[in-house]
Length: 188
Length: 176
Image (cartoon, rainbow over all chains, first blue to last red):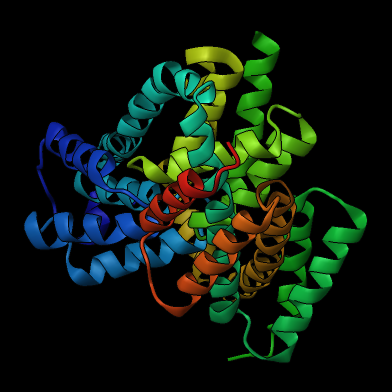
């Protein structure tokens, strides 16, 4: 939304928005849920660009829409400060360090690792660790999201459907969403 | 070259568009596009790239998009795949934010998203089974998996410690 919607008009220079999110993108490890608290600290506590309440509103939109959490909140904060150019600076800031760092690794580091015995040993151990992270994410999300019998039943049916039909996950997601319109309708 | 760039863009656009709620929501979509639909990578390579994306700063799916894009089509591939994964966020927030906010505040949207997340739980679980068949191949890897899964369910641990633990255990138990 344009800055006039929030009632506060900022004149933060664009380079400052870019620099702030470059810092967030370059120094925060562990993905979206690790990055959000850092963004909050930067823009609410240090820079006072948005209030705690505004940040909470931003998070609600961030979590209900497609895309990466850090990216979505950076764009929204940028827009609040300086409209569309501000939003673009937020996006560029969060994305650029990833692109530069990963390009360097993919181009120079990874080819060397692939033929190294110790690197093979490291990846042999890391692969099951990553699978454990993914499985843990499913359990934690389930604990948080699946309330009551209807939620668990819906999840189990969709799992069976995905295994049996082998159709694209996007279709399973859409079926889940449409079923949610009916199953979750009576909940307050 | 043009054809691969286009399919990279389209694949990662789909990943970005259907990753709702961030984090590991992108794993099943990326796995389907990169392994099953296009056969760009095998499961082991995919897991290695997710691990690298975890270990490096920044959002995991952007890191993974850059890496996979580079593997398939060099620097242009990296840029195009990354652009694909961030396009939905840019379009929805920069151009359609008024409509987006109205849609998200609609109670029907909350029910839709709840249903979608139930599907997501199923899909992430399934992805861990599928990828697990490649990663869990002997007793040490099964132990690493079980130990770390239990640890993460019992307390909140940064993913970085998981990767580090996996790496150390791998160095110890690897059948050289």
